[in-house]
Image (cartoon, rainbow, N blue to C red; front, side, top):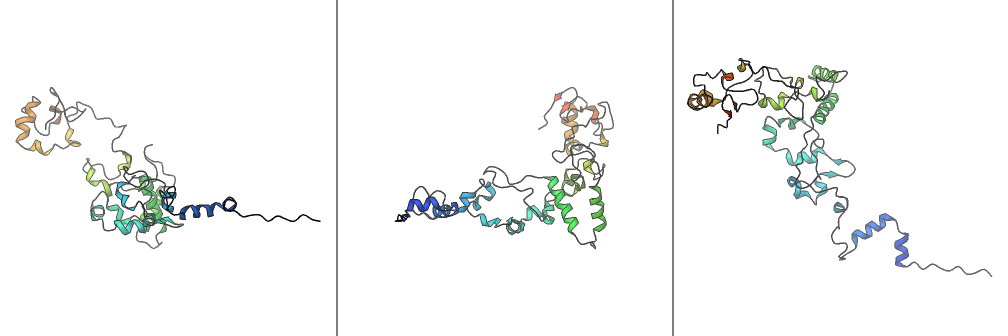
Length: 268
């Protein structure tokens, strides 16, 4: 006689062991009033990649404010909050935001409460601009400019190793005109000398320290056109008869505050 097959007893523990991982996660999320489960009771806390910055701390428990299922972070979510930021859209250095249709390349979150959600990436900015140019209609009034810029990225060698080909397509003066210490004497092709990570130029060598034509590049501060120059500045340097345009009489090329015969001098 064949042995009778014993029926398995599906105890709670056996059910849990045979359940799928997804079921276990769902069960874990809905388990009520257990102190072990009170700390992380939402899917946001389970998947959080890091704390938000202080600027977005109010959205810490509202992932849907920025994230969209499958799509990720959409620019429209950023615009919904920041479109009316007049100080951002009207200031000369930041007005370019009005024409940018992508935010995540330069604005990073989940790096911590004490970190600013801004990482200015000129390479990313250039690529966004080129992407927009390529997507414009062929009959665009800027078509000629677009083709010129796009052509520049093909086979163009940057003027120095501290800047990329894509970055050379940016028009620096659009954002940095107020920072131009050359008073437009060198034109607007800043990339010929400057890089995007800093304004200083490591290769720069000042002209001869004996040069007497300083005014070609340097303009005296407003105080030099007042009585302050004759009463204090010229006397401190020991040159009471020096003229404002004779910078070499008092200054050295190491620094403006390095005064001939007086050393480092702090005026104020």
